[in-house]
Image (cartoon, one colour):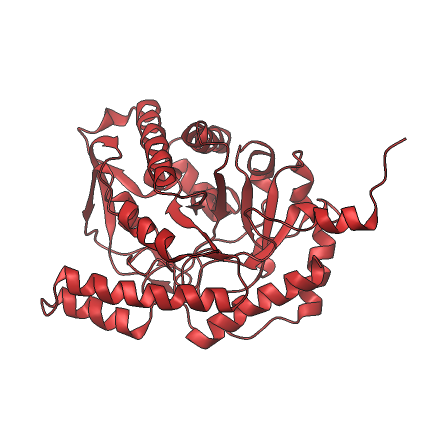
Length: 379
């Protein structure tokens, strides 16, 4: 006969003192006008790098306080020092360089500005500028948990162009070096005080639709082989993380000026995503019909895996009906215990510096909405 918990014990089990939190966030925030203006001035040679950084510092201090005011226990720097959520980190790895391709990344009815990265030598992690970025955030977070967001190691495989003298198409060696570099990165951020690290990954979206599967063919591999490669890349990278460090992953279908690149439910990659990754939590997009249903959650076997449901969209300012969000959380809890669920926006508010099509006040209202709903569900 199983031992039943008391109501008090059940309530305590629903409180999370460590990340991911019942009310959480993906990371990026709309760039403020002072930061946008300063970045343009720096690009035009009208401002020094030191002057730009001071303005970024001032604005990051402001938005950290704003995040706390919403009731969140977790704060980020909004990725205010980045132009892109992934390129800025990846191009500062050893062996990676930026370049300008012929065209940008195609989203639904819109294209980004042209930006790319290429692998020109052995991949490694040393003297990365984002270590200082995190240290600044950590120093101003106060009693809130500071979260660092970086692209998944899969994004270098997915977006990086291998030059002919780099790895000579030996993807096993390439993957090994990338994972080794990420191990160094994880330890370096930990040494700076980071206890909550999030990997962001759009690569999994290739398995979720027919359009994506054509991209798999272009890599010259099969979906099964690529899923195994992606899983190994992540698991190898995080294998030696410290016991008191939480590492989560956000699975994204694209986020640029309130539009997207991919659609489809998690079904085709569900077994790998939910039962093959040694992460502490997964941030899942579930804000509209493009994400499919909750049935793939049946593959969750671990009771210590936290699932952060992105039921509140970051793409538009209108607030969701809280009862609708609560009903969807209840629906998800038919597949996974409520104790393993959390709530967040479905993505960041500005994966690139252009940002999504909503106002800053609407952004803060969205985050307050997440906190208020989470407080009602897990009270």
